[in-house]
Image 1 (cartoon, rainbow, N blue to C red):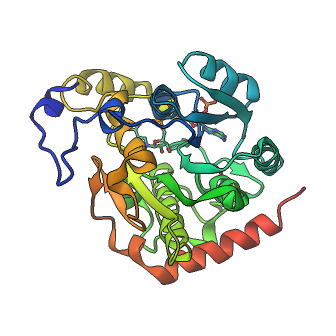
Image 2 (cartoon, helix red, strand yellow; image 1 turned 30 degrees about the vertical axis):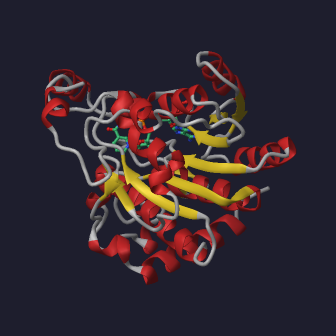
Length: 307
Ligand SMILES: NC(=O)c1ccc[n+]([C@@H]2O[C@H](COP(=O)([O-])OP(=O)(O)OC[C@H]3O[C@@H](n4cnc5c(N)ncnc54)[C@H](OP(=O)(O)O)[C@@H]3O)[C@@H](O)[C@H]2O)c1
């Protein structure tokens, strides 16, 4: 817990900056629940899997490889199933969808957590900028592919970031999804994170009239492996800032665990959360027309992918 965590306030639901994943799930029995978490081998995903399994859920954890996911599952107490889901590889995502369906489970929540950040050089996946493809398109394929497996009151939790504010002025640069007209690492990360938000908003709109929900969130700023692509100096800054202002990993995983299982989030949909409470996102992340346009474009992208 950082110095700031000790003095930060709490939101309307009693949770806040310093709340941990264990705290927001305290007293809950998740026995009989099945929850899928992407990126389960590291950082916030590993902590999310650990705490949800601790509370009794069967956690289907995905990683780039089955071995990584299974190894991560073996480090936590409770029931886990490790599956491969390399989000930049459509055949891997499709195989993951098929593997989950073959398990015959009903998913009470999907936590779309995995992500890459601020790749220093333009990198492409299937002709699209890598962060857009991994963080948005890969999760779009996974979540829409598993829609039929979602419980009647199932929750989709999309891990976005306050860095969505760094997205280009137009939100999504539909004419530059390959980065050919220019690539700025943080703007590309921001674009992928505003895409996460728009995806959750449009999914929530589509869930209207049902008990299913979809929300996006900012977990806070936490020292994890996410900064691996950045200048090593950033690591030094993080090491200094961590005890003062950054969240710990248990604090960072709190908002996604709250949204996935806390009764206080039941029926709440189409919102952006930060520090376990509803927060304001950038104005255009609330634009239903932009969300719909991104959805349609993503469907076109997916339809044209190999395999
Ligand atoms: N940490 C922060 O301050 C912060 C702030 C705002 C938002 N977030 C968001 O929080 C989420 C979790 O990040 P984290 O901080 O826990 O980072 P992390 O420790 O780096 O974990 C990221 C996870 O995503 C996985 N991943 C990356 N690329 C993938 C791909 N192509 N296919 C499948 N899995 C892939 C990683 O797998 P490998 O280990 O195999 O690479 C890892 O399991 C991300 O969506 C991030 O954008 C984090």
